[in-house]
Length: 108
Image (cartoon, rainbow, N blue to C red; front, top):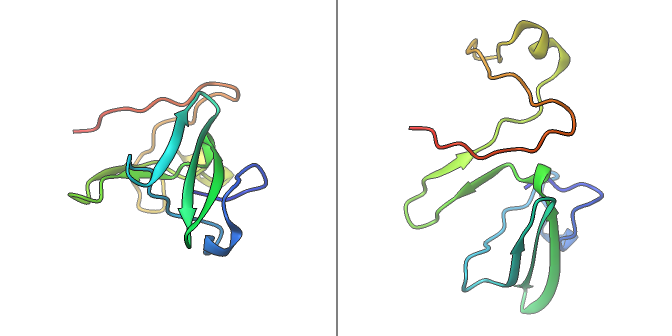
């Protein structure tokens, strides 16, 4: 998850502006996933902390059991938007309109 001013997580566990969180049923308590944020309580170094992560800050979701998951594309730069292609040369789907809600999509 990308950490910004709206993200409430223990700063000691943030590395390079990102944090990986375990929000499994065993690790997170009072988990709430809303339209705007994910909120929960979790222990960091044995100390319970309240966390809040805005939905746009989520970079990916994966299952530790099988290492499969879904990673979201980072915001593209203006040069990529103009060409419609990423650095790898593959075409990208158009960015959602400002104010539009993000959707999860199953990719097979």
